[in-house]
Amino acid sequence: MEKKKQKTYTPKEALVKAAAYCAYQDRTQQEVRDKLYSYGLEHDDVEELIVRLSQEKLIDEERYAQSYVRGKYGLKKWGRRKIIQGLKAKGISDYCIKQGMKEIDPELYEQNLHQLLEKKNATEKEKNPFARRQKLSFYLMSKGYESDLVQDALKGLDL
Image 1 (tube, one colour):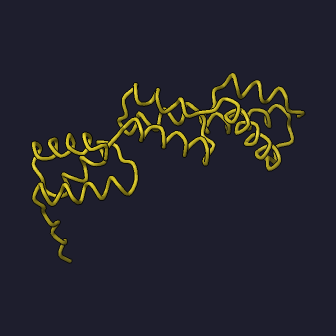
Image 2 (cartoon, rainbow, N blue to C red; image 1 turned 90 degrees about the vertical axis):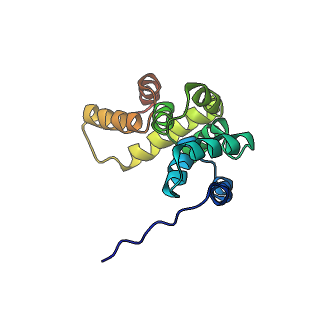
Image 3 (spheres, rainbow, N blue to C red; image 1 turned 90 degrees about the horizontal axis):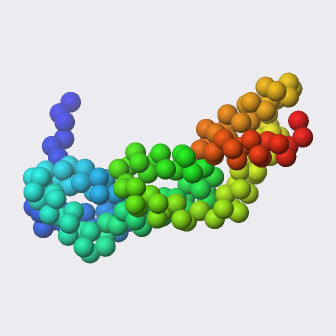
């Protein structure tokens, strides 16, 4: 079976396609860079387009970090540690990560933790209180919650 040849674009065509790609949803510079390279562009053209897209606010890593944080903690109920890890994996700067983390409402964050704990506690089959507490703790920490907050939440639980 023959592999389909990737179409190459001129920098002007690539700019239009990249602008549409960025307009669809927030993207990191690295995601856009990878996309531009897939269009068969040279390094200098890619970097020039990245700068242009940033100037036109189509790529904004601070905005990306903020929407990433809102989505992960609001919808998926992730903890701070997992969110930061995810942003670092995407190559987001520490400054942008800090700005994004400001999106977290401490009260809602605690509420999420307690909701996850109650939900998991209701479905956990382990009878031994020590093992049960350990399983609940591991679950919440795998969701990215800090161990001191997890321990405080577990203290308030009757096992």
